[in-house]
Image: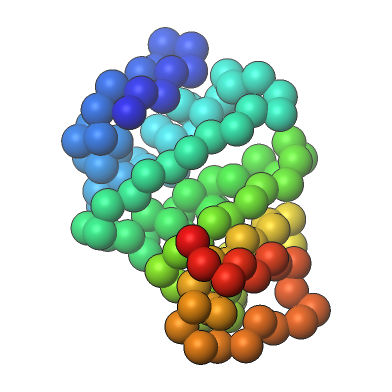
Length: 124
């Protein structure tokens, strides 16, 4: 995976995971890597199991800080949107500008909740 923005370049998944590890200045380094992206860019983050929850929370915080640049979509295939919303709320992370695509709730037998900014898929 390569993410290039200005002088910053992340050329491997290992480098990206190192950036996200605790004590590595995740917020400032990822923000710097995203800084020079053109308006209306699409960015895909592929996150490994190690520090999964921490990484997702920090990435959402960074994107929320850049909220003026638009909304985001969050595709979840392993955690129902209701569980994610509760976890983000506990960590004081706003999801107001996030549209969720939930490919697990219906498959796991849960009912699609109404009132959320979410689309519920029958299967991934």
